[in-house]
Structure formats: structure tokens, C-alpha cells
Length: 200
Image (cartoon, rainbow, N blue to C red):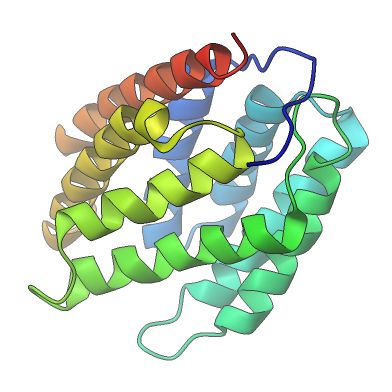
């Protein structure tokens, strides 16, 4: 495992979770303006970069998701490259000592695993999806896998709720959206706890 940085790793779990819920809803509606707004909020609350890098990073996340979005034919190589550029920006902060190519590969890998979990019934188990997120979190936060596993599990619960919402027609009035939001906030609260504990 990489040496940990000295700075404590804090982020706004409520803001990150709420903005990610908005981003997921916008993604499935292909409302890219709304996605960008949510992405800016997510990056600002999650990584504490300056305004310029926050907007640039959010734009890269948007473009990566647009490269990934078409189903079944998308562009995972472009998505990985865009996320690598995003993580280069993140790696400039004093809080994280991640490796951008590795972080990008792990990010897009959980996207792949989730897509198979979502569309190929039985092809990918819930535990495989949890482990894909554990690998990403452990790398980005330089944390032991067992510390970040509860956060990963809650985020997968949120994905399952979101997938149910998608199957139901993506209605903005569907109460499942509130459940997605609540579960994501809980997931990021658990991740924040793991990130702090990893530096104790």
C-alpha cells in the first residue's frame, strides 16, 4: 500500500451524496446540463480543489460519462483516459497520494461491473460489485479494504435502488429518488469515517 499523506482527508458527505444522486438521475435522462451542475457540486464537496480545477474536473467527469453512456456500444478507453485526466487534477491536492492511471482504471471497472449487474441478470453478483468499489476506495483513500467495505456496500444498495427507478421509467416524482439520495449520503458518511480512520 502507498504511504499515506499527512493531511487529514475530510469531505462533505451530505453534499457529495446529494449531488451524486442528482448526477445519476441526470445521467439516465441524458440531461447533460443537469449532470454537469451535479458534477461540479460533487467535485467541489469531495476534493476541495480550487474553482478552476473543480470546473475542469467536473467537465472531464461529464465527458467520461458521455463516453460510457451508450448501451451496449460505448467507448471505455476514452472514458478511462478522461478519468485519468480527472485524477491527475485530484492528485495535485495535499490529501491524496493516488496514481491517476490506476484510479481511472478502477473507476471505469466498477462502471463496467455495475452495467453487467444492471443489464445481464445473474452475470455479476452484488458482492463482485461491492469488491470493485472496495478496490477503488482502498486505492484512492490509501485505506484497508475492510475499512471501506461498509461504504461500498451502501453505495451498491443505492445503485440497486437507482436501477429500480430506471426500470420504473425515471420519473422525477418517484419516491425511490429520495431513497437513492438517503442511501448515498449514508454511503459517503461511512467512506468519510473510513478515510479518517485510515490516517489514525
